[in-house]
Length: 321
Image (tube, rainbow, N blue to C red):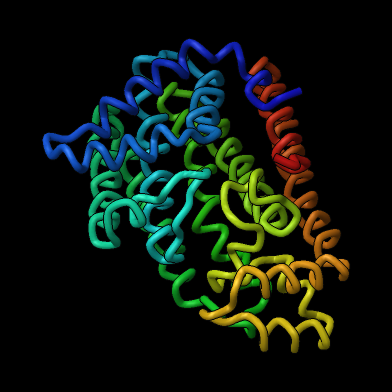
């Protein structure tokens, strides 16, 4: 089953979220609106809004209330993508020019900051100080993850703990917050909101590990950018860490990967990584997080949202695109 079919019963509400998203990113400054809409119209899975809406189904569901939370979380995600593309000097995002490529690095940074600010502004429509605090703390952690990504570029001596901490901040905590805030917006029980946060964290870790695997196993057409782009930009991900457990492979990677590495040279490195058991070991770790997510789901009330969360989590961990 395709991902969107799993939550097709949310389609009308997701259209409301999409409309709100378009209205929110518009600015009196035409170029800022154009840039934000450029990224928005590139598409995306809208996984975070979906998690917000599904989590809200565990409480008193009201789309007019919950949609603001869904948009706020998606704006944080969009802002982090814009900043990531500056950090990585990326030219393409989902097969389209990035904001930094189409305009400039400086403009892209301000565009990302604008999205962060709009996210905080939008959340004030939910009169709940706890929700405001969670959102602000999430933005802080996402930014810390971005800083760690800069610090860790081309650092081949980093360990597994460094990698897991980085993806926790860059990806998992935002998905966790999406689940938690959706529940809070619907006035769900605190225990339910806390359980959903934990579910989102485990799913988020699995999601990012799988993304990092696909960067080596996918094609340029599937990825919307050249395969191995993460490593080409100096980002040392889980498959690389596992591959470098072989000293011979470590020597090849550390000697060949640097800021001037060409895409053709990267193809050789990708082939080398695939020859090891790094991809299989990465999938195994992703699955461990996924199993933890499933165990958390078992503690939540049975409803359609719970079964849908299960299907989405299973898809995320096993997806090939």
